[in-house]
Amino acid sequence: MKNHVKTLLRERLATCMAPPPDGQTREEFRMAYLEHIANVAIAVTYVGPERPGGRLRKRGRTRARI
Figure (tube, helix red, strand yellow):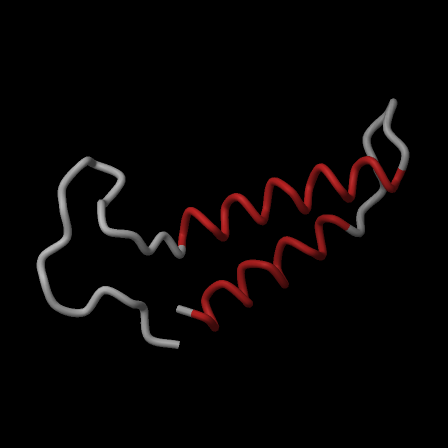
């Protein structure tokens, strides 16, 4: 899981280095894009007692292997 997230961030960081869209400074664009990617990474690595669909996890392993 950890490598998947790192790969996801590396691929998307290349996009973050592109020129900003009209009306935004480079810093504004980078911060907004990095915030979006952080939210995507958090969604991919969701670990909690309840799954997003509202169903409880089965007993057993509750932590992701790192």
